Amino acid sequence: MIFKKRLNNNAVIAEDEKGHEKILVGCGLGFQKKEGSEVEEQKIEKIFSLEDAGQREQLKELLQEIPVEHVKLADDVLSYARVHVNSKISTNVIIPLCDHIYMAVERKKQGIDVKNVLLWDIRRYYPAEYDAGLYALRCVKERFHVKLEEDEAGFIALHIVNAQMNLKQKTVHEITTVMQEIETIVRMTCKIRLDAESVYYHRFITHLKFFAERMFSGKTYEDQEVAALAEVIRAQYQEAYQCGRKIAGFIGDKYHYTLSEEEILYLSIHIARIVSVSRKPRA
Image 1 (cartoon, rainbow, N blue to C red):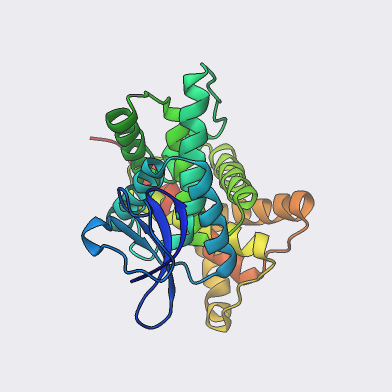
Image 2 (image 1 turned 45 degrees about the vertical axis):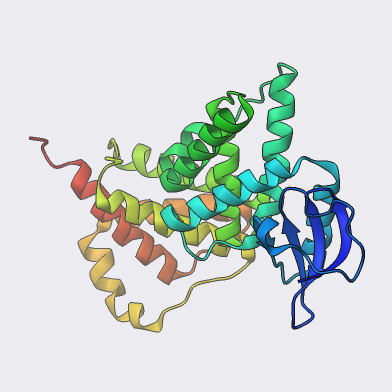
C-alpha cells in the first residue's frame, strides 16, 4: 500500500498494487507520513474500499471530523449485521451508521435524548435489525462508557434496513408506516389478534416489506400464472380477499398506488393464513 494523503493521525488514503484507492484506519498510520511512502501494514486495522466515488468522499470527510473509534465501531456493527441479518448488506451503510452513532453519543453527553416514535414497530417488523441495533448500544457502552436509550437501537436498525433495500431513509420510515397501516386493517376487518410468533405472521410481514418497497419504487407485480387460481382464491378465502380489496382501496386513496389483481390475490393468501392461525384455540 502506497501512502497518498493523511486524513488524520489514524486514517489515510492509500493505493494498492493495482492503483485502487483505499481508506485505511489504524493507530498512528498518518503520523509523519510522506506521499509515496509505503504504509506500515502491521498498523492497518481496517480497510475501506467503497466503489462509489461519492461515498468515498463522504467517508473521507467524516474521518476528518469525528474520532476514528466511531468508524471502527460502525464497521463492527456492520460485520455483526452481515452475520446475523444479511450477508449482502451494502458497505455504504458505514457512513450513515458512523455519523448517527457519533451524533447519538454527543447528544447523550449533553443530556439530550431523541424519542423514536416507530420503536415499537421496528422491534416487531425488523427483529434481526433491531438486535444489531442493541449490539451497537452495547459496544457504545463498553467502548465510550455512554449508555444510549433503546430508541437509538431503533434508529440504527432502520439504517440497516435501508442498506438492504437500498432506499432513502425517509422511504424506510414510510414503508414501516404502510406495514403498520395494513396490519391494522387486517386486525380490525377480520377482528383478530395477530400471533407475532407465528411463522405465517413473519411471512406476512416479509411480504408487506417487499410490497411496500415496490410501491414506493413505483413498480407493480404481475404474475400471469396466478390468474388461473384467481377464482379459487376468491371463493376459498372470501373474508381474506375482501380484506385485501379493502387494503387496495386504502392504498389507492392515500398513496395513489393501484394494486394489481395479482398483488391482491397474494395478499389475500397471506391474510387467510395468519387469520387461520390466529383463530386456532391455544393450548
